Image 1 (cartoon, one colour):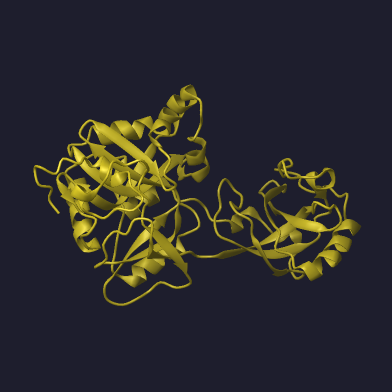
Image 2 (cartoon, rainbow, N blue to C red; image 1 turned 135 degrees about the horizontal axis):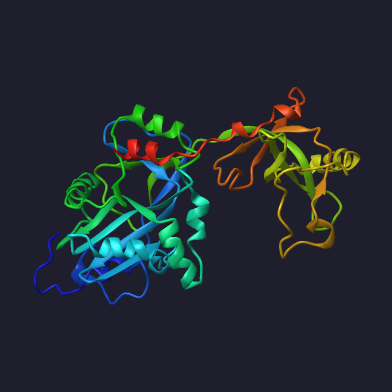
Length: 366
């Protein structure tokens, strides 16, 4: 849709709404950011005609709005991101295109790899630290949708049209921190992306090529690759009552032979907790973790549940996990089974995925 001269509502009215009727003249004065289109998690990629596949990036979802000299960056939850990423505000302000709305992902590279923990560290309240990190760990933006370009409002348009406009818009720019996210209609290529997930990639997104943008709706499909790891139990924590085991603390050995804490699992069946408690208490008091150790208690902890209990590294379990950040599982894992057939010394850090390097990222984006 092209705006008529008398339709004076600025692009802000489009991006600052949670429910958008996609008619600029109908939009009231905004008071909240627009919710981005979301995805429904499924087990398998859909196949057939009419599907477009894209990598699901492991960063911060971000809607970017530029209206002349004004630029805003909004998080998925509707919070402003611009103050934390001044270098990105400057990037969008210097682009040739003066009015646009882009949907995409913020990423950060550090130590030769895409690093979610470094991205999280950018959300700091101190202005001096924000300024320093914008130089030390600058962000980049990977764009995968375009909702407006100049006077064209594209929300009602099918994805195929929006993608073509996005490609043309980015072709007009030549600024390395701004990249076009790859897309394909080839399911085999999408499955190859899925096999790389767990590091910089968080899975694969599938979208219908004939679909309009639907703010706030789970109108896309996402598939994540779940992985398993064999881990040593290096300790445990009690429940709040202090009677039974609440979680197992998991470890892996590094090249120096030190057992590093990499995460936890709390998915112990209620009927099994008494047996786990007795078994772990019998080996309690060993060295526990000899490398990186678990963190401190949370505000919900009791005196007995707050301290982790070290055990001798004798038991091995297999767990299911989704993401790795900073050499540890980002989320809690799911306990699958015991592994009495595996020696603890065989449980090594090499099991975890290596992060996607900038060179590999450029190859993927290319």
